[in-house]
Length: 336
Image (tube, one colour):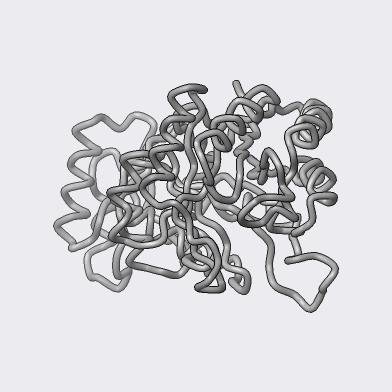
């Protein structure tokens, strides 16, 4: 729309888009409003939109992902959920254990990561595991413990949802719904998360291309939820010295193609606690908008992923190092 377009002009354009059988998505930027007309571009009459009062230009979006594309919204999105802010020059830090194990464990972790500057608390209540015999999480009881930790620390809660049927339940307790790598292309789950009031953290599948990842995000956006964060958690390669390979180039590459913020996961991306501090610093230097780091009171006794989890002292040292990198990049880190 033109800079001078009135609300009436915008409403008229939306009505015209709907009359063509297309779905209008309105994006209000700092300089002008854009109306994304989503649907089959072969529909006759699209050119008539140019004659609507207040319309500046009608242009096709080349990328297969329409709502996620920077062609649609050149300004990077900033996502805020409770105490967590990601993007806009601020590096949000999500920290906590892989799994919620007890009230003492999750509350102690919440206080520790907050003291070191974390923006949000992570913890799995529903855990999809490779083996059916591995710990599967405390489910709703774990969600209640996360809510208890939030009540005591005011940290936003980030937790995984694994089934479309659980989205409503998890949304009652969480501030951010995490969709794990195994579920990146669970399209019914993506659509259900798109109807949730919670922000969504979408992890990249271990063998997914970036286009596939962004198209997965498109499902959430198209369902009506604009608050999507991408999470690079490492990809599967031939290399065996790390659990996965964490491609730092994902941060600047994705930022060229989408307005969605990107969070890096150095814990899953390496699988070794000793490598997490260096890869956290490197992620910030590469331009990541956020970090998600596994932290546990006693990693040696963790029920899941203890080998890649930091203890409280290690997390504090990691945050101190990351603060220096963020300052050098003229960015802020952690809690605002």
